[in-house]
Length: 360
Ligand code: PLP
Image (cartoon, rainbow, N blue to C red):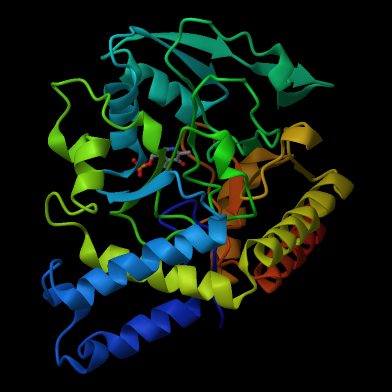
């Protein structure tokens, strides 16, 4: 039977991409070897790297004055790289605290500066929400403002577009990049771990406005230094070549689906299908204010938490995998990244309805 994988990351990849990778695994481009066995400096791999960058640029409409870097270390390495690269002589940066990941970035930044933590969490009609951006009080003297537009664990999204004048805006887009069109020009730095909408774990995408290069503190490890990475075309050391190649296949797949306008349409439809179902039921509940509901990560609770275990066992048997909520939150969470088809979400709500009939 078909399996739908709702994991928050590493997450489901498009099956077409996996099949292509499987087909090419031992003999890539007629070389008689795998792409993961060749030099990152070979002309064949450089072609992979350049094509991946161009496709990502096309998808996100990245302006020319932005550099695209591919790196190791996941998003957490960027929690250090951002202050090291952007603070310069400044000791202050604004950090919006909207949830678990934004908070983790603050804790890491404390090693390098005094982050101004700005708590934007609020309650709206008894539901968890985020204060509107106009109420975010930023500091004139801070080097940048960092925020996380999609909190993967809490399922809280900030969809409002940032507009803070000259302030450099840095965004952790790990769980929402490529889920819909966006305006890159509003940001100074965007970063994302790959393991949700980009590809397998092990590679990180960084998009940095070029005027922000050249400011890294001198103690910055070279592998985290955006200027060094840029000068070496992201090949300062051996990059995660196989993950880079697979990410490139995902970018081609996204283009073939119709790009981010079409993907955004599908993602909205998928999320609406699940939220509508949860809202109509007294048996399931989502505690996030409608304006801040994530399209990518949908947490939900059963009215009777004692049923969690049997829900997880039965859903797994029905081919609906990885619905367990994050350990810090409990309950359930369905992640609906790009590779999840609407049919997967429909299968989930059909199961949930049946479960409610039997246990409600
Ligand atoms: N930021 C967000 C929004 C995430 O969802 C995650 C992981 O799930 C991270 C950061 C940490 O990413 P990594 O494990 O790639 O360091």
